[in-house]
Image (cartoon, rainbow, N blue to C red; front, side, top):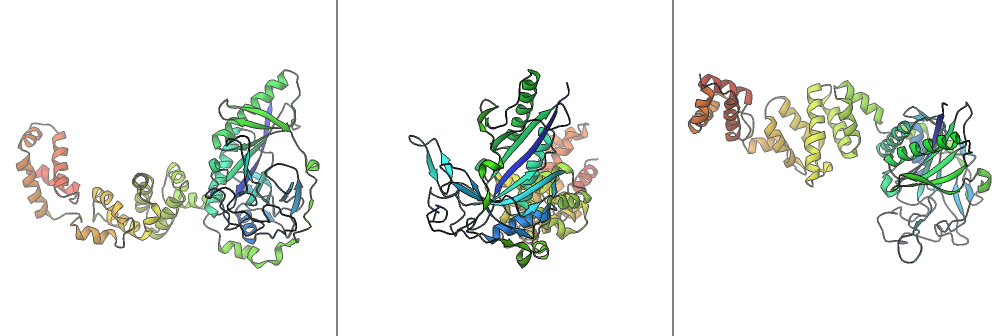
Length: 468
């Protein structure tokens, strides 16, 4: 029998605002002592009033413009009622009937809605005897995105989540680190042997792309095996066991009725269209170049798809490459040098403790110009690169000061060659006896003697003439 899996995703992303969603507390849930950034509002003391964070709203609307979503003209916040130890009000301020965004698409997947809500506190179950709660995360702005049920395999779901993380980082609205819980994915999975959707099961809080894909694959297999036995799928919420690589039942699945949504009477309704900072024009002015635009731009310069993805995955490298490519115009040769250095030499230096943000794109472009004009050799380029991090002077000035500009003068090369031949008589004899590899050794000795500044092509040509 043929079974068709159908998957919809719900994704929560913590937003990079300075303060929390409804109060003035610092939005630093991961880099502070427990319960150090709290106040009567996020602790739900009686009589406190929440005030929406306009910057968080602006971030969500910016995301909406990036994915082609329909922006609401009117919106409101609702109370989502349930009791957990990490939610002191016994309700969460969220959105139900009037989200900020509807529709749109990302990576070929249609979106249903995107709304804003407050995050809950963090429950910890591995310290002391029982559980403790850290309220630093309580009230952190949380963007929730819901896709249409149009995904049919785990790979598509994983690719969507990766592209979403990249977009959030490109827009600068969320770091979206899954291991820190800054981006949390939940998968709604059903399997059916008809055109009708099967019974939906939700797998919550998947904290890596690998877990998203593995949990979906496990659930599809579990659903099919259950249906093959003639048994019914239970609508429920399940968790993912990273060790056993299987899902486990947590509780029966709630519905919207269970949460008893109603408009929050403490928060004014929001006329989105009346705020200039929320207008399409204002949002367009702060919209960065999006991932697909960068892909097209780099592809047109001859950069391979694999290297493009390497660039896009590191925001600092991405910024350096984007600025540098813009500066060099349509030169494919320079583009190739920029991307090759940015995806090989620069990451190697980062591993040694260098910071990409300390390398100005002006100095980087100047280095590439010198290489492309053959004013310096590749060896000198690699040696100059680390000297440019945090430097006030450019590579040309450093190369001139250290006598590293490429030597093409025939007289200077001839003097160098004479020294190499005199110092390596046995290797010279080997070359004259027919051992071609000996020539490479002699060229290498010349490059070493010149500290990489000799033109290797000219050096080899002159060596051959001398050794005839």
